[in-house]
Image 1 (cartoon, one colour):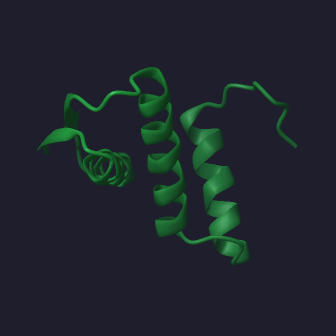
Image 2: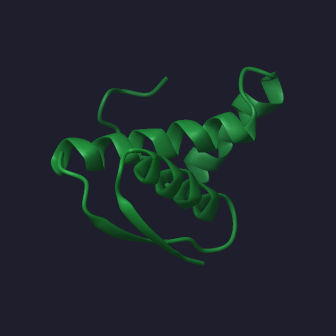
Length: 84
């Protein structure tokens, strides 16, 4: 079980996500939406007034998280540019 502020390695996080998806508790899309929403929420907390942002989206699931972040910020009034 994870402790509140424990930092995980990429391999540990991948294993936890794979286990959760295999158990049927959550889908990959749901994990991506949750991650993107958490980051977008923190950006909006840090900078409450919408501004301009560039989101870099590489290949794979982390890139997918970036697209979620971009979409949510755009919906909140931000001017968003996505590079992928």
